[in-house]
Length: 505
Image (cartoon, rainbow, N blue to C red; front, side, top):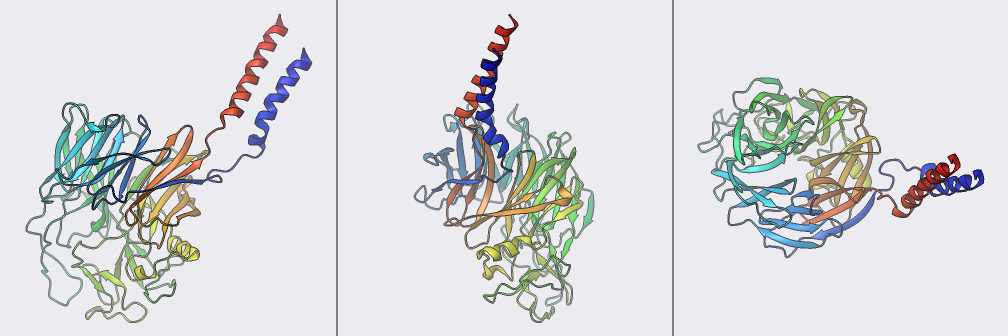
């Protein structure tokens, strides 16, 4: 009997030995799955934001004119939802079989709407399915338990405030815009499907430094992240170089935190300020305003951290963007063509938009880590750095997603301005000691904007939508367990149990 048990043990060990002795590190087996082109879906459709529905196992891709629904396994298109009757769609988020669309009004300074869809039927949800929110709802996300839906209402004015400081002097100041709805975050109670609170940011307690409020516009919420407990939301106020912290239990803004500046003359923070067809990283006497776009919250050591993609952004009309060599600023080579903020810069004291990096902060907004020059440098090494963006914001990190794999935590950062699609991967398991892992590059894709990780059939995947190429691409981050090996192992273990019982008799 011992011989038979030993034989079964050997069979079980044999089935499992290879994976155990050759255990791969997280991301060692990352593999391209498919790319879907949205060409021909609808005139003017641009692949921007992607979300995953576990019930129907589909990816929902939003892009101006509506939502293209894809099979998450194959990338095949399953249908298109046209939203143009209501306005332009900016974002989609999914939880528990409900897909929420953020749609701006045809007159964008007027209130927008959130519409709710059943992901199985791809039709409007029964009962209340359209909810009025603030002007230009730009992004939305559910709290972890799905009880609340949070909407970032960017509220961009049609015409910005006019110059109030002396013409030609720096820094410049702009008055309030004539029509400029307040930037806000709507909190929708999913139980009642109604707005339970609207958090605004003007007048909230302030901390940190370099909050920009003289740009001719109100705060413009861009992106939202939520802590694991679902009690706090972190809202990027991109043009203001700040993040708003909202208490979701009271529905009020606790603080607006200025994110400070990055010193491009410090070691490891070099930039390329020249559009001269040559990659030339240099330490320069310029500071960068972080101005994050995408944001993601994650846990490490029992604490909440927020990861930010520091894209940078001037006013939509570029009214505050000037060359550093302009009269009144007088910068000389190599900085004369560098685009800087007219509302922050003065002669010999230049401020550029964006930090050309991704960074990690604690839940109070204190800087824990910044990637320095890594993003630009790695894009250059791969030959995908777009030199035409050198004088502006470099590779422009925009979207961000945080994923847990094999006991580690990774941040995926989409780079909007490389010559082919690039997503930088960082190990953020220990936030203060974050390390660069690799760059994920996909030929044919350009400008990843939205990123979404999801689990399917036991494997972990990353989907990202590419605005310029109008495509959506999926990578497998971790392998799906092999059914044969697991079945053999489990069968062997069951056999062991049966033999052991017989032996005891």
